[in-house]
Length: 167
Ligand code: ATP
Ligand code: MG
Image (cartoon, rainbow, N blue to C red; front, top):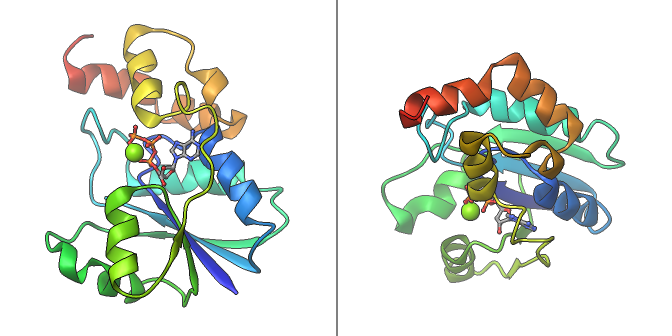
């Protein structure tokens, strides 16, 4: 069967990687949905969908499970969101998420969402990584090496500093 995993991945980090490695042992194929795909160049959402897809695809190069990475734009209508996701994703039977809204919306549509255990959540969150980037602290240790490469290639830290107005 196929499992769906959704996040914003701003940026993709070792917590996401650890969850996907675990999911890869539970399903035949994984669908990774890149949420809020239309957003970029914001302090909470600095990277484009394409940049996030690069981070994910390169980090999972050696994963022993086929996966598809698809962008999912926001819909300003939560009651229709599950249908919106289904309308663009390959068919799936299982959903993995710890986001309370995602869990609730799928549950109401009859899909039990599995919540994988968190991996060192205090440090491994997009929020903490963006904070470290802005303060010039070590964020590289929290993401796969491929993500460091992508962020260097696109000059991502400089972008974040510029849009936050602290540079
Ligand atoms: P932000 O702080 O920007 O919200 P985030 O780290 O929460 O970033 P998201 O892209 O919002 O990352 O989350 C995608 C999914 O990854 C969610 O289901 C979230 O619960 C899960 N996740 C986030 N951090 C971890 C972690 N350290 N371990 C396991 N799962 C995580
Ligand atoms: Mg989050």
